Length: 299
Image 1: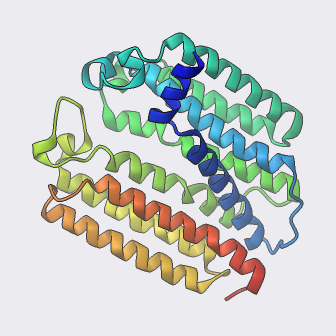
Image 2: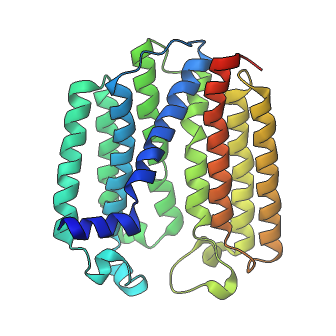
């Protein structure tokens, strides 16, 4: 069982990079809120690590839940994947995810200050895993699946925001918190659409946004979303570091050029690869703002 699970993680959810991702997501939102509130003395402890682990754990659960939800479809379209190929058993994943959720619930119950927000996050995740009790309707509609499933990223952000505000006795409803809730929602939305945009010659039975709306309209839509997203980043770091704003602008300008190149010739590269590179640079710049501000103050 352990060998099969190791194979699954290697191919579907590399553990170390995803643990790092949990730290990045939690840390970016947590510290950006504190710095914008004028707080430069942090009371770090096990709660921050548990919050980061919760993000990692939740995303891993969603990955496994997706494999269960799409099992029949994956057997037809992606038979080489670990679960459809039989190299990993459903029972393996069921046992693992039960232990994972149990540990995550107990850690949040005993250590975190925002357990109601945690429950809401996992309730929404559970509804997602059950197709909101409308599998036939949602599974057949890619836009409906996006509208019902993608908001989970924002709920995850609110989980982090609530912890930060409760711990430091900050107001929960503020302009900065509103922006923080959106700032990692948009990259997830853009990536989710981008991974389902293909050149006409690469389309298969698998339903994509480019197949539904044409690759031009789908690409133009995420180009618009990318600029809306970067505006939230500008506003979050404007009072912290103007050099970050400039670097973010250069990054989004580069991404815009790639979008235009893809619109001209969609066969030259997969747009999702460029979106991933852009997003890693974007989030790295946002994170870098934190130590720079702490060391040098407002620039």
